[in-house]
Length: 282
Image (cartoon, rainbow, N blue to C red):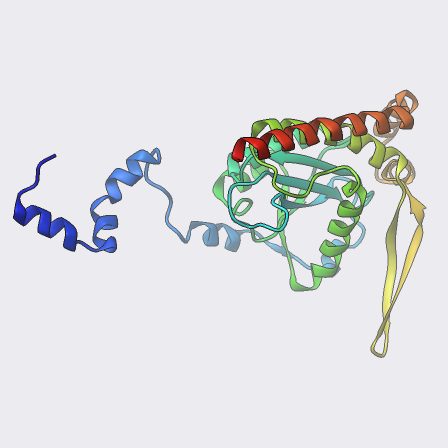
């Protein structure tokens, strides 16, 4: 490309904002089409109702909270694997799905897998304000599959924190928390979750809040006896016998020692993938 002296002078004087304006159509074409307006996710949020603490009461199995956790360790830069965590409020049943990137279509794929993995239908999902959830792709999918979508109110932070903490504690011994990127790492993490989900949901007990009340400046909390999600599901009055019978059949086929061995093996596979990735970046 040959420029005249005048043209070269104009090119050298052009500002970054002018370059962006002149190349806007080219960038849209390169990205695969015109993107939605910046305020679109805000419009979706306004359509989604807010569920407060008092609105929940005692929901039946199938009403869940969902959140994304970045597997970037101490770093927030770059495209790390995102783990979509879905926790059933009534039983504590937990499912985790690794996503290569934060993208609405991948969230929908994970929700479809969740419908197959949960022992009962997912009836409601409580998301946060993350744009990965609050978009037309995810919200439309939920509504087309009769899944109620809600946002947490300001008084729900304690509940969401407790559910996330339960999940972190459950999977802390098994999942990797830093520097996970790429398809190979996502496959290794998926293999780890496949074994961990059975061990945690069927054999690992956890506490569940029964009630809380305030006495002056002090909040008194009382918890139910520790139980596994499997045990809570078996005694829940809203769950029909067919679901409970299926859970018993799965339980009789499981060996907790074998599941631990599978998780250890998946950990070793993940460690090898991580070391290979670090060496390739040198």
